[in-house]
Length: 576
Ligand code: HEM
Image (cartoon, rainbow, N blue to C red; front, side, top):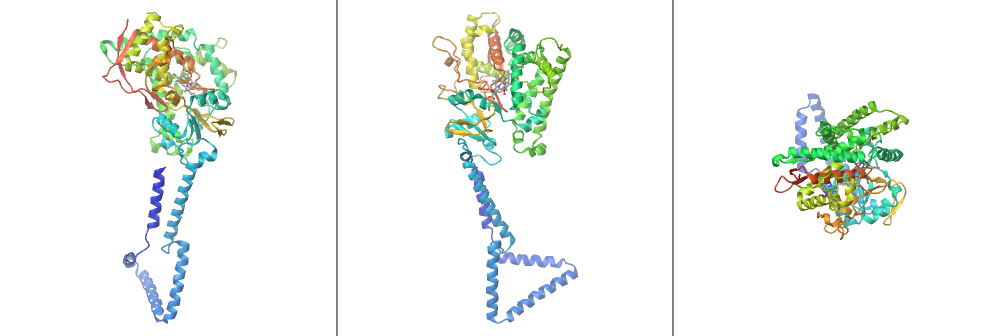
């Protein structure tokens, strides 16, 4: 903003300071004219000579006039010059006119931008916020880590503030306000502002669950919850897969980490999480290290990163930008390629399921339930949500263990005491207080969803005295609550003990909401919580993780919309 104002004023100064033609410039002009005349054809030169002669004749006629007539003519010409200047500007030429025009346009544009930036929120009755620019909004001010912006703006403008992306979005960063509005008044915040252009590119319409804001979402969410519950959310089959599979991962890690060889845990975690989703969705599991998982993981990461490319984000406001995709390194084309790759994998898996599906049987997985539903009526759309999020959270949990060995030992001691050597089950959760506290503390600090999804206000609402009109975006930014020093003492400090009461029991904190809140909160929360608990506790029951480096690598690296730990390797020791 400041830059724009300074730039405009420089332009203004240059334009007004531009001098008229001087005597020296006149002489230069005459000499150039003489050179040019010399290049004319002989008839051209003759015509020019005649015109010069006529000029001389006029001049000598003028000299022959009485002084009083010369004076009268001079004053007439002066008057004409003044009149012309007042119309066309200083310099008695069209250049002056255009310079003036530029000056007026620049001044008006700067004034318009200043008025827009400083008064648009007030005019619309929205909460204050950082001054936006037309078309860009506040997008140019966003830090790589948006929490930094949010903390700064919260300090300056209060618990709720407006940012322009470039449509207005009200960001709510306070626990009580989130409860009062997003939870208690949930129906008014259940729509989404859809990235329509991006959806068109990715799935040829507004399909899917996450970005869908229309009536189809309601139906699909109801269907998904029903189907997933019926085919085994939290049920023993899924639990057994997690328990059995964790043993497979542990034995692979033991082999890979033999003789203190550093191990990257990502593939193991990824296969564990993917197999739950694969079983849930397609009704089958795949062997450890199956290249399909690596392929899906890579494609998912590419999609997440490419979705947050400025050109892709800009599509919604400046759709014509798609024609210049190649100029920016083809981010749109690359996003579509990765997404198509992902859809291909899903399509192939669906074909396998469809071949084996018997109509009369109760569906064994989401895809079978989906196929049955599609047969019943025309339906479309499929999500593979929850893969990257769960993998990233588990990578965070183990990274925090590497960084905080005393917490890991304490959790292991608790497992040894309460469970012993047998495999851990979900029913052990109520006794493993410290393990629960670790997971809650990591989720509070990790905030893997770097910027929460935007809801759309579907009926007028009043928040903190501001009338928020229908159609305005709202972001329930719970990550700011997680790191609010009014809610948590030394919020940036890893301390699972803060979630343990005086009786040594785990206390679930309603202020910690990594799965978000209200009607659009995470659909896979139950499954994700189960995976986090079973995999984390099973891993540390059998293995101890420590850093492969003197100083462990940093936490909280942002990729696209997600925050995740920088790649790290660990030393694994068996506890058997
Ligand atoms: C640790 C793991 C996970 C975290 C931290 C997480 C977090 C989130 C968050 C923050 C949202 C946005 C809610 C909002 O708009 O306010 C969301 C939405 C969603 N998540 Fe998750 N998620 C996780 C795992 C999963 C899993 C395992 C699944 C699927 C089985 C899943 C499916 C979804 C879906 C479908 C939505 C969109 C819901 C809607 O718009 O109605 N998530 N998740």
